[in-house]
Image (tube, rainbow, N blue to C red):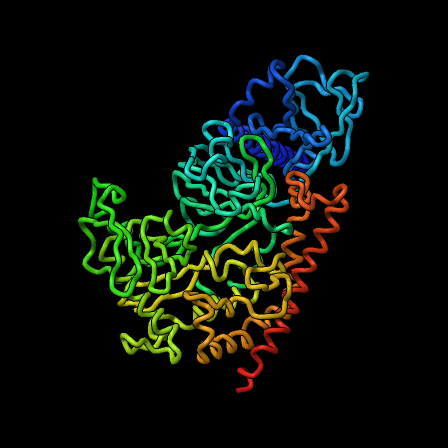
Length: 572
């Protein structure tokens, strides 16, 4: 009996060894299908000195050289810490790390911390080598067709195809597929920062981390946010408020063409779709009716209509009989309005653009623009009734969603609350004849953000209203806030829902996000020199910790202020 048991035990062990070997082979095979362009030649010992570490056979991570002090930095995924990784470097001469010879193509365990790198023998001059490991979060690897980011970083209009692979937090191959395109996105973040944000379009739909199956995904750099957690925090507040279609998101570390790009927020794109803004896809219907024709090539129009200052769009040959719904709109700035395909300017000069359908027909633009103009007229009247239609402003909007969206903007004191990234959508009339507010987007300049606005408002100060006091000719939140019924609706949701949740959970929420990405943020701070005034990582960490604590304190004190501001509405 004992012999039989031993036999079965040996079989079990053998089977387990075969299984583990298969897993390792599977990982290496995945790596081979995801070769980093332009790196294969470094393994043959020739070419220029270009040190890299390799996960599997073909997933290379380039050592980053910091020109300021001539040091090298190796940013490796936290999931591979303690693993033996091949090191290649090109050139004929061997290199030494802490006096140990590193043979080209051999495997080594690189311990975290500071080391000495010598490239010309043990007698040669040494350079500082720092090995960093990121947090245990997913890692996203991108390879562009050209093997370079130079082209897509030059212009948002330039895109490239390529490949994308995601390693999960345990180092396993979570996703791999082709990209139809990748291009830079953003406005001020694209113009003013080196760390870029990206839009990725996959060849096939994929459900990434339970966020719903889709082709398009966003990588937000959070370049204006030293803490990296403001967007995630604002999205969480919107989820607490139950604001429909708020994007799901998760933190990832990004490598592009072998280079470490830093910590990013991977999220859903604001778009119409079953797993996104789940309204009718009017754009797809129009394209289907106009098969073989490019909507963007049809006749363009721009003209004044009724009380509207201007409208623009396309004279499309065929469209559905019912055009009452399937609209995703964005309130934009005047300088960006001209860059969009379809939209309108209200009588108060509010630019509104069509996110979907992007190429709106004459009838679609006329219908939606006219409806919004009626809403604006009512909203800006003293009694809330349109002098033209006799309808109350609340008959044009879903008050609940607008109150919840306003609460997000006011709570986090979002700089863009009165300027851009303010979305509204409309269902078909048989579902609702009203506009709905949302989804939420773009909060890297919120929650104790630095700066004084043109109106003299200190964004860093938790006291004082912001979104409600932007007294411009067309500001939606200012106009709505003038009406007592809107203020009461807002106060009811604040006191009954969001204040109790944030009183209990703000610290856990914000510190939780910061803790989740602490090592990744360290790497990000080194790579992009966050807090440039700091000397070394320790000072950067101290400054970051202080900034994160400011976010918690800001929300707590903001709740105190709003409780006092709206207390009389609760008492009524």
